[in-house]
Image 1 (cartoon, rainbow, N blue to C red):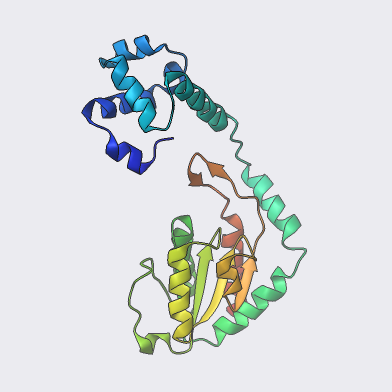
Image 2 (image 1 turned 120 degrees about the vertical axis):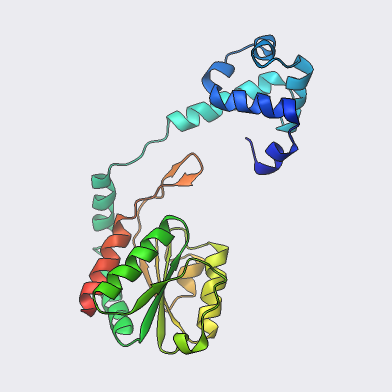
Amino acid sequence: MFTHEIIASFNELELALYNYITKNKEKVAYMRIRELADETHVSTATILRFCRKINCDGFSEFKVKLKMDLAENKQTVIKSPQQSITEFFERTLTGDLEDNMEDAAHLISNADSVIFTGIGSSGILAEYGARYFSSMGKFSVYIKDPHYPINTMFRDNNVAIILSVSGENPFTVTQINQLKQDGSKIISITNNKLSTIAKISDITLAYYVTEEWYQDSNVTTQLPVLYILETIARKIK
């Protein structure tokens, strides 16, 4: 409901109104316009102008959208770790993941170095992967900046391991394109084998778990990624 552009357009009174609403959503959803005006010390005209800025015809429509937003958040169900890992084993380990991990391990074992990259939670696991592979004897680095300059000498006989839940992050796609043009082999670990990142990779390791969102955050389990990373590293060793 409140985008960056909309918030940036608020004046001082509207911003105070916004702050009050975000802290008291359940209360505001059942208030009359006069009650909200008294609570926030603004006029009803300011409230109506505020409603129009967030694409609501009036205060009644705004309250309907606010209630829908509250209901959606309450209905969010996050699976337990046991459910997530069971789903992964049932969907994935009955397929060709094992063969793909063998292929990935063979490709990596013949490489001089490994570059890990990812953004967000995938970036955190990419950093872990680089450390884990290095601990197992394969020199690896983690690069979190998609525009980081990689020396040409470093890219000789190199494998890049790309982590992405959706497989569609535009910055990561750009980075893969750069690495491919410079001769790197690409291994992607993603939840969707039909994604853009998967399609432009030499080897794709897809883990097929249900994507989960809480509000605007992707909270899809990363347990399968840990399993895949540690399995490949041990196969190399």
